[in-house]
Each structure stands twice: as C-alpha cells, then as structure tokens.
Image 1 (cartoon, rainbow, N blue to C red):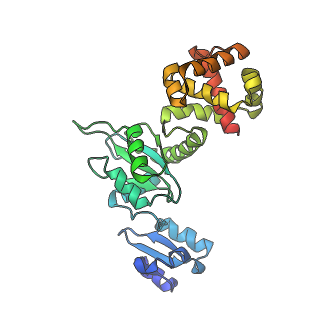
Image 2: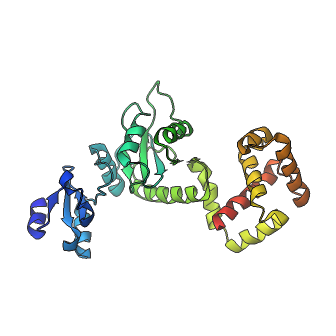
Image 3: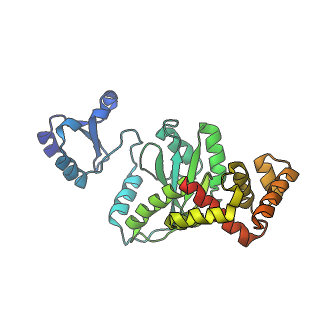
Length: 294
C-alpha cells in the first residue's frame, strides 16, 4: 500500500526528526510495520482521508510511537475477539494540557509496574492505561498513591478514572467507547483525583435527571443556603469524608468546633440531619447535580 501512496501523493514521506518544523502540515498514519508515514494535508481530500484511514490508523505525532502490544490492543478494540485473556481493566487518565510531555508521563507510569503497561492515547493529555491482573506475590496498585507521587514528580495535576476488571474481548469496542464517555463525564462532575467506575454510576444518574426537577429539588432541600457556596462546599466535604467530623475538619483546615457549628446551622435551618446516612445522601446528590448544572 505504501508504494501506491507514493505514486498518488508526491509529498509522501516517512517521519524523522527533520520533520519537526513541518509536522503540523502533514497528516500522519502508522503502518502495520509500525512505521509512521505522512502526506501533506494540502494533497488530501476528505474522501482520501476516509479511504486511507480505513486501512491505516491515523497517528498523532505528539504522542509516543505505539509498541506492538499497544497496536494489538488498538486492533482488538476495533474488531473485537473471541480470544481468551487474563483479567484486565482500563484506567483512563487526564493530565494537565501542555504541562507534561507524553513520553515523560509514559516513563513515569512504567516505573509503577513490574513491566511496561500499554497506553492508548486519545490525544496529548488523555488516554487509557491497560492494566493486567496481578501476578502471584505482586501488590495491588493504589492509584491514590500513584497520583500523589506523580503530581509531586511531574509538578502537574493528574486524574484517574479506574474501570472494572474484565475477562472478555467480545464486546470490547462498545465498552471502550462507553468507558471513555463515562470517564469524561465523571471527571467533569467530580473534583476527585481518582474516581472508580462504581462511584461514577451516580454521575450517570445525575446526567439523566430532568434539569427542572433538579432545580426545584435544590430550592426545596437547600433552602436559604442555595447560593451559599462556602457552606455547601463544607457540607459536601463532610459527606464525602463518610460523615466524619474530625476528618472533614482536617481536610477543610477548620477547627472541629467551627465545622460542627456550620453543620448544626444547616441542620437547624433545613430540618435535614446530614449526620444520618439516608438524609446525607439526598443532600449529596443535590450538591453533585448543582455542580453539574453550573
């Protein structure tokens, strides 16, 4: 196919360091041999792009050249497979745009695993780590710990959306597509650095809720505190800390008595005792929906 492309497009070239100044003017593709080829965008019509990308995946020149294993995953996700496979899970990540080089991030991630892990890049700042199940004697990866170390080493905010373990590739294409969608939605709802797939289900419900209902429920539940962002943030942190006053006070940098005063004030004015789980859940859902609405 490369020979045919050479005949059709005079600008056909293989990527190397000489193209650093002109790489933005080219559309890049990756071949079965893992070579990166480019054609000047000015020579490509929409029809050309559609036809070529049917056979050759497009390639973002800013991200690391994919390994054979990463290419295998790309192809498997695209086509699906009946092949038996050890349990694995997808871990979506989001790094601060224009702050970390993809190569630098990939090297940092590899340090946490006994062997290099496949990374499927969506763009220069988002992608999916494919984590295989643990071998005997290996310790489980804690993404809360990883993120602390990474942000300390790379001086940038990083976020993870951790998927469930799976052991089938039959419907992997549809799952991968929905996984990316759910990851982006969950990260837009929450300010947490690490979110699990099960935690994100709540955001999916909120996303489906009727906006008019959310608006009405917010007024009824929050009453005079509807626009009190400081107090609502305090309540949200308290609930997210499992209703533990001491832990929440530490996280908010407040004296325990000051936090207790704010909680009592909310309980007194709204009649909702957020120290009780079932009542706290209602308030928490309203607060999450309010953030999504804004």
